[in-house]
Image (tube, rainbow over all chains, first blue to last red):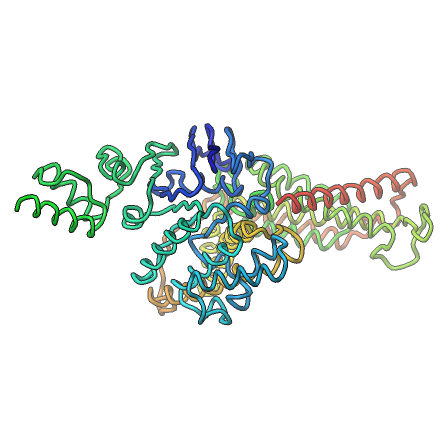
Length: 279
Length: 296
């Protein structure tokens, strides 16, 4: 099966300052995957994903979306397939009401009026924005505004969602809501890429992680594989969730645990199994 | 976005011009401004322009200057086209050649060239000052000669906001393009400008809170992190900044023989070539500007 996103020996050098932001990156992403892109600031995460939506073009190498080379395509052409949700919703929102904001993307795609209306209603329901539809986006709080930003991309029904720091600046309730929405997007068949520093999101929600360091892709694996790789963790200065650190210590120092744990629920489950075994 | 950002900001360097105190540079720029507005003599304006270009080259800001000039010069060329058929001179005008309803006039050609040189002289000198001086140094120097601190601060912040807003505009434009918005035309203005202005207002509000919480507006003498000193050479440049442009301005005002607007005669061939060249130059610029906007 042809991968949905195919990256071949991608290099990106920013002309200003001649900065190499990506160095020979190759990877494949299949339809329906839920992926986390991690690394320190300046490691090349955003540069990588901006190639998928055509905001950046490769200096060398190729990026294919659904088998199509992105180099000659405009952002507007790729927007139907790849949706990019910005970290700061204020960079996206401008309309007088949430509803008008949600209509903006599909109308740019030239969809008929009834389909736009249907998609807007679906987005409102999906993101739980029923009470906000007629409010000005700048009148609602930041966490909900961020959801409006995501919903404004959802109405375009892209195959790929790129979420740049989806949980930054969110309170606990909205953070949990975002986790749930990401899983829901995947369940609907979308491919989701989260550029994130939120380790709990990465541990509990994503299934595969791409780790970038100094412009290179240094690891591509499951969260369990990534978090248990000491060299990668140390060199990227990434700290796994505390429950994962605890499980790693218990596994290494105490040898009382066999597996790497990614969530509190998993730890409770393992403890239960261990107690049952002793009895 | 990179392509449409005009880099009117300091270009780091270590030339003599860079090392000079900003005050003489500002004085020279103001002097050239006064001189340019006081004369239409194309030789005087041409020399001012040429010296400015030599300073651009000498201070190593050529690349940045050319990027600005590539936009400014073609736009200024319209002055030649428009002035040639409708001179900003009192009548009577001397006709050179006519094309249907349009007639090219001697005074128009002269006026077009002098206005073009005037703009290029003023902007070239201004670019030299801006591109070789750190904004903080300019305002620290102005403060030393009595400019009020608050006024100074407003200028500094305004200057600093320009590149921030330019960068913000680039991000917003990309955000809207990734929602399939066309990157040009009237349809692009509202979705791009609203977030930039809202962001600017929010930024200014946050800044005012941040300033007040750090004792902005308190009375008493303030210190400055950046120290700007006047060297002997700066005093000499300052003195010459009064003397040379001042004397030149006095000379161009009192010497009536410098008015060449009626004595200079342009041949029909030269006039047609100049007007056509200027018009084509401007249209080529418009073509490339539209192409760049459409491919954005």
